Image (cartoon, rainbow, N blue to C red; front, side):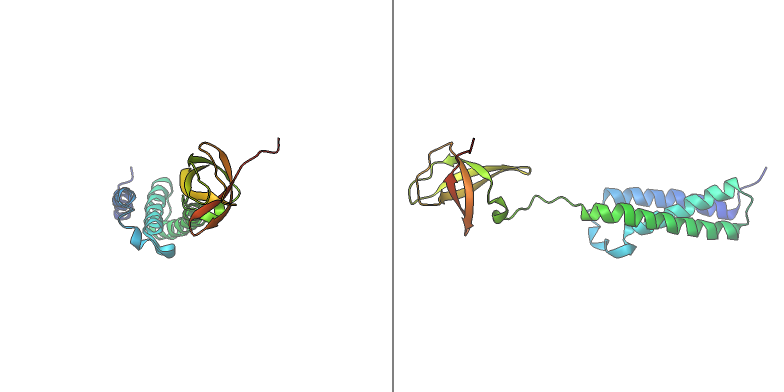
Length: 172
């Protein structure tokens, strides 16, 4: 029966230690987020080291290869896996960040509902239902007309944060 070599212990302790560091990083990633820049972010470095230790330990257990060959193969496999993780998982996740921000101009053409009646030559309030929730905005009649409570309105324009609306009349 084959004993445990020093390099196997290094790979095993590295696997356990880096695994624990990865768990701590995942728990406190928002606090450490300032370090997250470029290809050498903590997630990439930790996964690279974790892949080296895991691959090296597995190869030493399952093969009779020389330790130097195992280290080189572990480095190559870890590089490939880290590359795939970074470019096919981490980069798309970073760019797929969901934002609830919107510009007032992006609401033009939508239909809202009057919740505070709009007097002639005055201001009222409307709400617009979007996928991000309900937005309430100050509104006035596009032609300074009066619009009653609970009427549907079409947002025509936005002027300095005030929505210019007309009563919505469906074509059907």
